[in-house]
Image 1 (tube, rainbow, N blue to C red):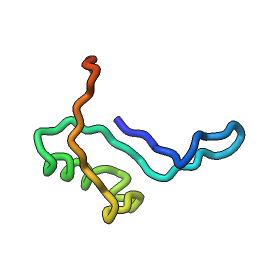
Image 2: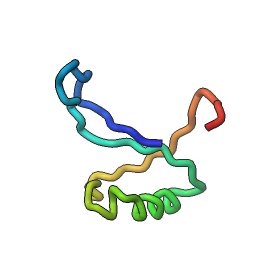
Image 3: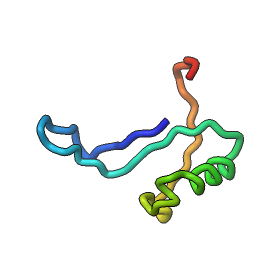
Image 4: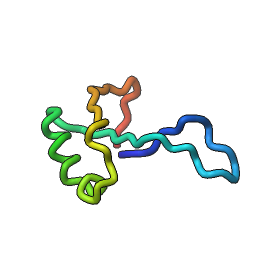
Length: 66
């Protein structure tokens, strides 16, 4: 699951002010996430800036099947 994040709320009729992208990944380790990212199309096509990649553990407060 992924998406974009903005510097401000998008205004109707204007392109959204995208400043980054977000991906939620379910994995057993940080290394597993890195391996997936290395194989992702955005990586292989040079879209993502690897100097700014950050991986943070996350647990949802709301449990719902995906």
